[in-house]
Image (cartoon, rainbow over all chains, first blue to last red; front, side, top):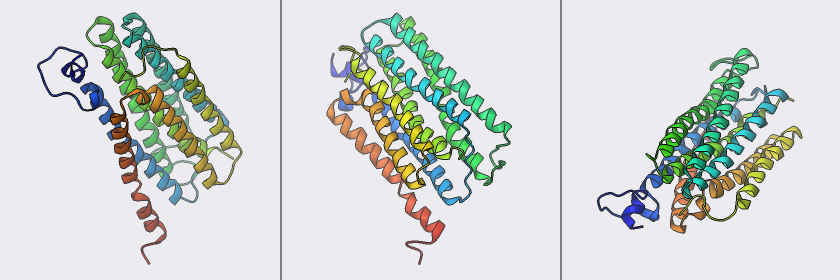
Length: 208
Length: 102
């Protein structure tokens, strides 16, 4: 494979400069996007930490049932990450049917995660939590909670759409293994962010 | 530059998967032990960083990328995170008026 092929992820195209780091250009772009997205999540989590630290009566509303649900969501997300690795391996081995199957399993698990996430939100809303008020004390709790978990949920929904489009495109031959790899990078990134959200937002605020 | 490698067994990924499942369980146990807040925060962040590192290195395949890209991505990301954390001292100054305001 020539430098040009590497730069374009293996597709034939006019000659151009080789991609930096010998990584396909679309994959490099995804890495750069992820790094910039880290900024978004880090800023949200730092702001959340600042608000929590600055507020003496920060609510601790999460009962055992909520924590059990969050742990189930974590299990689902980590399992989906592992399944997505299987999809990438199948794609790299040229197994289109296998890669499509594992991508769709990931999609199903991700959809389940999103449904549980929305259910969790409705549970909080039923308890009277809004962006500006809640039954337990400081008003900023709702805004902080919905912002941090909302941006995670938004990413999950975006990734599910990407998985569906790329999965179907890969099956039909429109997309290549590099596209599946890119979806994998984004999906794994969401998993990595969730690894920080769970302890900082939920486990540090379990009801005593 | 493959991510993850198409060749070779799944063993490495299974081990990482199990480790990533164990980490939230350890976090859960720690949370219900109700240690002091600073200790809880440090422990949680430590577990989270280990889990994230496993995810980035193996599930995202950074461990199998070429070394120059690993160094570039790591340095760039750490710079971003360090820059964001620049806000902390100023946050504490706004809250408590220390250490720079007096």
